Image 1 (cartoon, each protein chain N blue to C red):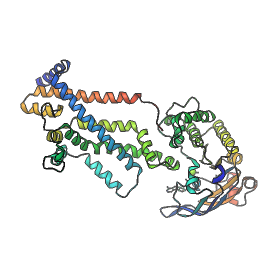
Image 2 (image 1 turned 45 degrees about the vertical axis):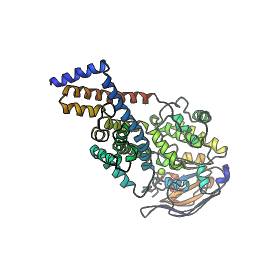
Image 3 (image 1 turned 120 degrees about the vertical axis):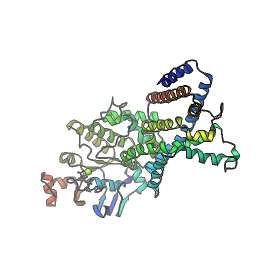
Image 4 (image 1 turned 30 degrees about the vertical axis):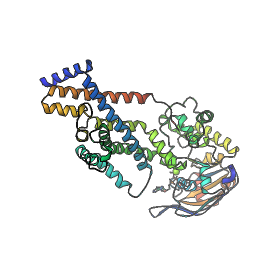
Length: 238
Length: 234
Ligand SMILES: Nc1ncnc2c1ncn2[C@@H]1O[C@H](COP(=O)(O)OP(=O)(O)OP(=O)(O)O)[C@@H](O)[C@H]1O
Ligand SMILES: [Mg+2]
């Protein structure tokens, strides 16, 4: 079931807001293993693209085809938001929530939550209210909660935006381990170092359009477009 | 001023001697309002959750009506329930007029809009927070509502207590549909009205103090209970 979500074929996908095109038209094919990193300056549409692919932003045109069909794909996916959403309950109850929705017995879910809390460095916080966690802890909790349900694909929107070096490394370790175990990630970031460490494929967005897309080595070795080159060098691209 | 003191001391005596009539009336007050409250919550809370998560054409209109109904004059509710339950009314065959059941119905009608409106406000805010996550998790409509109701339980308690407050102090409607019959439908508020009418101010005041004490006690008890609850269900 894990790999059945891919290949993903996107053609002419487009999302608007009040007549203005936010992202698209996007043509894209995703296949193979690994992590796809979405790069681009602020406001280029990374979040919107992720939401559109996940199916929580309305599609105003074009098609998004998952190998296993939209409904099955949706249930095999999880989304970690740029601003993590904390349920107003304990850390433990946040972690087990996705499993409880599917009727997994509480004790089973708890055991798994314990394991994930340990991996995400949240041990000892299980009884705490999730809403009192720090920004970094919230992001770790959101990631752990997303992975609790064994999704085939996880969307990550700037997963280490408010994390310090150590927490970023912890999160990247989790991503690398899960990735090796077959979980796929589509990750938006503007942390170049992170992109280089994690990406097997890169999508470079500019002004709501896919400006350049391809294997990570090729992209980092030498992007074709001048805008992507400038972005890689750290220049400001409009 | 003398009346106030007399009322207070008489209330004190009535309470410590556990005056039989007083206890009976107070318990009836409590029973009727708590019954109305439970029934009202069973209607109002799911309704509020539904209005928070579900987009449908007349949603705004329904919410506006609900808000307006918060100010429903109890006497009018009493009158309508009276007409419905009276011998010749559509529900006359049930023989409910001048029974505690009729009073429960009337109070329920009065507090449902209040509880639903207050509950809807907090559930709507919570839904705003949760929206993306729950949509992303592809949860069912029922699961959405359950999640909101559970996570907003403290705010919902406040809504329920507001409902209780309105119910226990209400007199207009239950006077009409209950009839203030001794030993049957006389409650604290109707007894106060009666004693005041008879000029028995200190007794009326005494009953008033008991009423206030009762309302306070229920509020404290429910708050105390709510602090002991642990662990989510989901
Ligand atoms: N619901 C919306 N209504 C109006 N405009 C929107 C909406 N969502 C996004 N936009 C606009 O679409 C553009 C892309 O936004 P998006 O959040 O996808 O950018 P981003 O690449 O994720 O940026 P960042 O790096 O800052 O997170 C922005 O200009 C934003 O203002
Ligand atoms: Mg973004």
